[in-house]
Length: 186
Image 1 (cartoon, rainbow, N blue to C red):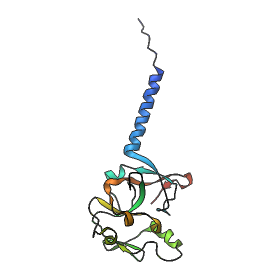
Image 2 (tube, helix red, strand yellow):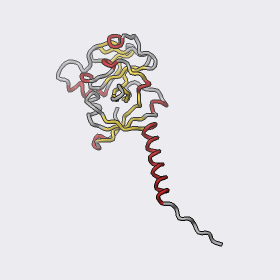
Image 3 (cartoon, rainbow, N blue to C red):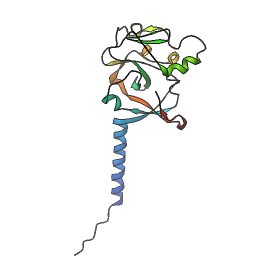
Image 4 (cartoon, rainbow, N blue to C red):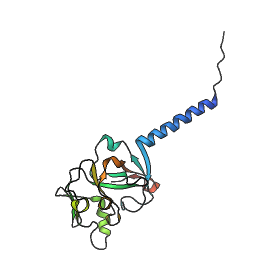
């Protein structure tokens, strides 16, 4: 005796496919990667206003943050900032004559070279010490010191203070829009 196969419920099959697709999209966006739009000019010349980037939410959690990583963090409940990590926990940060010093040692910042060359006069970054902005001699555990690459026009740790590592969403170095700017940034 031959049994007839029951016809598949096409609506149910499509519903399952959509539920799985939305579930995967939610997991990827919430736990792994998320897009962000660069808002403002604080990271110029590295990042331009309106560029769209991918934020890697797992990379910085698996490994440690590195100096000069570009990170996205919650600056307030409504706003996320994109900035560069300059100082890590235990570091002493200072600027003198447009030169970054970490723990008394000169640090190269090649990502600023083109911007410094365009300056008509003066320095890109004013002289300062960590104590002047944070009243701390070194960056405490659980915090980082961040700055925008457009040092003359950036709301960063010089204004908002140290950033809690818990507020960091992830790191970013991939621009996906506009297409002519697509690629990795350093």
